[in-house]
Image: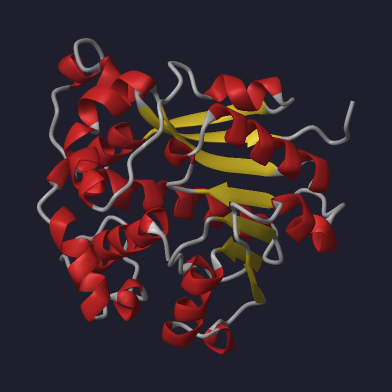
Length: 272
């Protein structure tokens, strides 16, 4: 597992700690499965980062809620996760037909700690070396699947604009009309607000790549339509996880409000 894949322990550690609270944001009871000695050691440098950790748990909750709403209409909804990490939604959300893509070493560990055989719904895990292999080739068996949901969580800040373009293109070509659920961060947020988190990342040997002032434009240029944008800190505020006066949040702190959001895009139904 490379340094970026190691951040899967961070996300999982946040959810594991959140699940132990009296009023959890996300409530992922499976996350603790991955908090081995290695997992706790990897999470330790991040444990005291209050606001990033609240944001991470809230990000998971927002995506949970979006997928639950779709499963309520279609319990057999096809869901693809690119860079799945230690995601546990297939075990928690009560429906769907799931496909997870990530590095083989990470998925090998995941299969030991949370086996596919324990999943109550269809789940397939597909190993991919993102450097040497093409996502398009891994998607080929599923090509033509319509109205799928694709989740890309905690990934885009590590991808260059060229890599994002390639990713979005591979997805829209393979999965016509899919809904893309993706967290995106502006350059200003990454440089100012995310600085404490990035300082810890650097000790692991990785960091965010330079972000765009308006990251959604890359997806729009590939033919996607933005259907919804949800402020992660705004939802945390609604859930009572942070306390920020409304006047400040909607004026002086707009960078905080709008700088890191969950975006929901609709892919074109067919290629132009």
